[in-house]
Image (cartoon, rainbow, N blue to C red; front, top):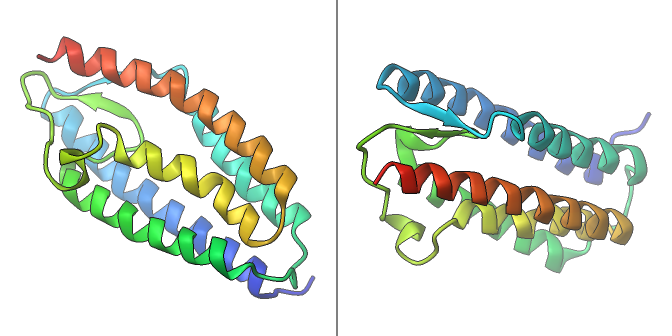
Length: 166
C-alpha cells in the first residue's frame, strides 16, 4: 500500500481529531467534577461513528496519489485556523460532548461573539471540503448531508441544555 500526499493529509486530519478527543476527555472530566451534566448521550456514538466513517471512506476510496484541488484544500486549512480559534475561545469548556455546568454563563468571546455555534459551522464546511480537495464529490455530498442531519439533532440538544442552564 503506497502512502501518497492524499493519504498523508487524511492521516494528519485523523491525528488532529484524536488529539482533540484527548483534550476533550480531559475537559469532560473537569466539567463533570465541577458539577457538569451531560446531555444527548444517545447521539454521541452516532456522531463519532459518522466522523470515523468519513475518514475511513476517504482512505478507502481516495487513491493515495489523487490529485489535490488547491482551492478546497486551502479552504480546509483556513477552517482549521478557525477551529483552533473556537477551541481556544472555549478553553476548558470545549468538549466533543454536550456537558453543561449549572449556573455557568455561556461563552461569548472569540467567534462566539458573531456566531452561536461556530464549531458546528466549521464542521459543516470541512466535512465536504476535505473530500472535495481530492475530487471525491460523492463522499462530499453524502457525508455533508449526513452531518447536517446530525448537527440539526445536536444543536437542538445543546440549545435545550443551555436554555435549562439560564
